Image 1 (cartoon, rainbow, N blue to C red):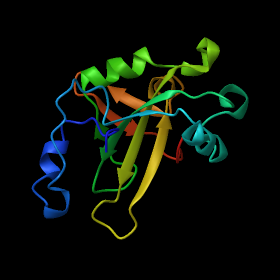
Image 2 (image 1 turned 135 degrees about the vertical axis):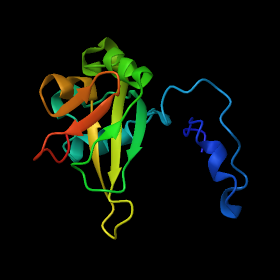
Image 3 (image 1 turned 120 degrees about the vertical axis):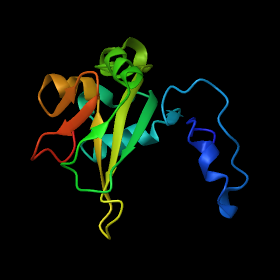
Image 4 (image 1 turned 90 degrees about the vertical axis):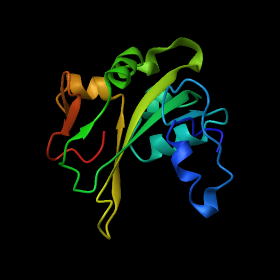
Length: 153
């Protein structure tokens, strides 16, 4: 629970099963902040094809994971704040950091929330994905549209 560093925590405490959850009091940097001290998450992301093995093997980064949800399918737009966009830009191409310590920004897009086939896409380094055309960001509204055919990057 300590990794969930979102201001949204205050909303789940109304549910009896989560009444123990306290609001996040710190400055929010992402919904989930995870220090991969053991390298397990990085290894999984490499095995699933989200990270390039040669660049990431042996690294133990900090992950800033922003969770975005929509009730519709994966082609539906979703939104980020200007603050989130600027943070994405700050942490682009983290694999180039020397010594294996770096911070990775990741969008975890959950979709089909109201259907029986809930699914997700992982967008590693979303700023770089904007540069290569995988994601299209609309400035000022910060709407994000995944380009068709890209399951995850």
